[in-house]
Length: 256
Image (cartoon, rainbow, N blue to C red; front, side, top):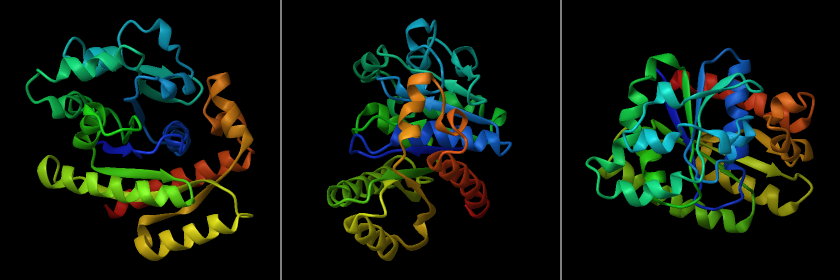
């Protein structure tokens, strides 16, 4: 039975998609069966996994609206060795169309339940806003992985996200909890980064992952080649960090 995790942060540009794609590839390298769910209409996770979003016959859009199922829509990332439930711009229309549907917050949960035995992990890359799509992700998940930069504004956004997770936990998904905070794009030379990192550890304790993802050019280059960073340049510091994060996740779910 798959463990389902949202990679979420209401702030944009914090490395959500980079984290989702590279964690999927990292887990696959650790022998896990992984489905990456692209829940963002930009389709960046789809492209980062090496799948051309403009050539999709079926995508998560059809799955959410009940016109297809996950087994039909999923693709395999040849470069990352994991499966992808892909997305493209059509998904933006699903927001409006789902408003009138029954059980609209649980559409994704119901769709993923049908393939839960095919995977060890399902990772959901959420859009950077609290929308109907993000709500579907949070309702489907067992927990949330929060990637964040160690800077002042990130702390402010974090409190909003924690409040959102509490509300969804209380009203829609009692299984939902914060799995952990992942420090990304970390620059140890900056005093502010060190200070914010220390604050996170002080406030959240063991909810802060031990692995820290450094700022790394090779990770940023990888999507333009349609590859996860961990396979694009396995020796890069960022790739090594995501592999270590994959191992940490495998260990952490044993205690969940």
